[in-house]
Length: 205
Image 1 (cartoon, rainbow, N blue to C red):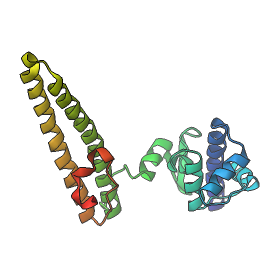
Image 2: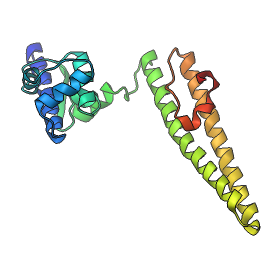
Image 3: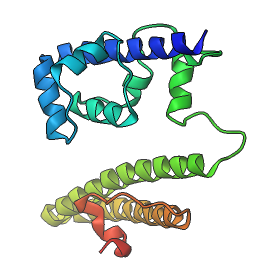
Image 4: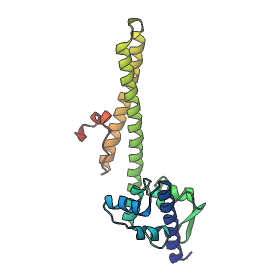
């Protein structure tokens, strides 16, 4: 595939994804343009029409703003999943769409073990640990409340169950703190913790 043909194909696929998502949200081109303007980038109806027709390439900034305005991840504009079974990642490299998605999102392991990918994997692990910790902390707090309200005959059993869940939640919080410290050591900035577990990381205060 020639370079010009490739760029046209990319623009056409992205434009189709924009149009499909806009219609599914019930937005006119004017309404989408207003959303983009509210996000700080002016994209009028005529420009949106040209984008959707594949007649205009998008800048990186426009992809990000349009994705936000359309309430979708940017990768869904870069690698639309519902159009073709394969995509050309480069003019000379055709990949199955699912494989291209894995590559674009950084889920495919890199032989070089690059620093950006290491940070991405560490961040994903951190986010999984945060979700787990929110769940275990909530369960422990709920069971502790149950223990406080339990009948005397049932208190020992419920209290022991609360202690076990509190131990699990404590270990999860330790893992989250370790993951955040690892990100900082890598030169990355850990995202803010949800308010319910913000106390886990004293460096955030």
